[in-house]
Length: 410
Image (cartoon, rainbow, N blue to C red; front, top):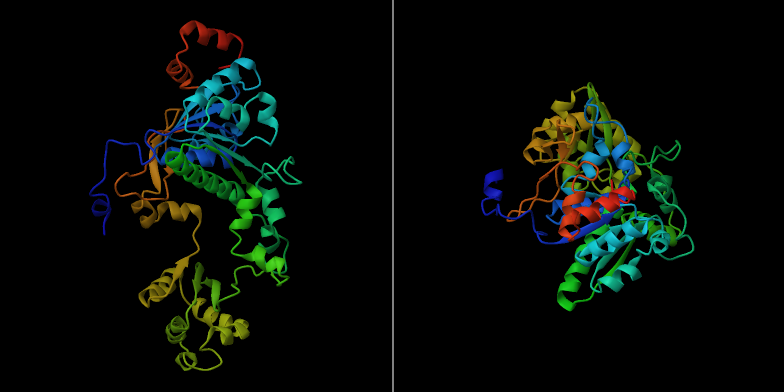
């Protein structure tokens, strides 16, 4: 199937499947903005509420150009497809505008530490009093309840607390954090999914609700069942690139780089054994089954590595793929950005930015044939739609001027 065939029934009159849904997002950095990013990519009208000084993601290097008003890579990535409204929520004027926005919204997303928005008069109870069927999504390090709920919690803290950090890295090395904002990303994904489920329930029953997502819970849910193994006292050794359930499987050196390859099925071992020049081991009882190969992990790794070291990465990958085996070069993100398949999947989309430059922005992962997703607009300038949004609330020029004079808005 090619691109045009997949999208042959696509509609061009909608922003996405969530067209008509309004989201108010009061978030900072990554987990909360990621939730809003997903909902915006799916077509919702996401109004990002920021302090007049702007949030963390706007100021984090590196930047996408050398322009004087250059755009942060974080801001460009996670705040695209949104509108920007500046509000100082600590001031009564900011609180009042936020509540008026919430009255017209389907979803409110926030990622303040539990208790902060209650002090501002903007917690779930306050918003629900104005909008009974609101879906109110809270994202935090440890959740809205529990002994640690009021602690500050950031991505690497959730990685450490969950157990993930203890298993990441080489067996003889120190624990290593994920190079990406893994806990933030997963919490944002679960928050968006929770919002969609709560919207479905609201549409059926008229009932809103509070959705509570913590970075820690998201990491634990995505732990491949390891939390259960930990509870049962089953050992979980750090294995680096090895796999508990398969051998040979891992990263192997070639003349000009590394490849990731693996044998998950005994039938695949038969193919690989012949490919690497050891047909006599294809059906040998000491190698033919997964348990047997796991018992001889070092030996099978040595045999595979002897074959890969004599060849270049393209040759190894081509030979294994042609044989029907899974294999891939270990690419940098720069390599991935040049990958024809990545390009064909629209995972990089050229998008104009607020500084007047254009940048290749990561595209949505989900592909929807009827309501295609795309990066419709770059991340907005700080407060770029403030007057537009306040006008939608019915505020006149004099009221807007008073808010600006009081520094409630920028």
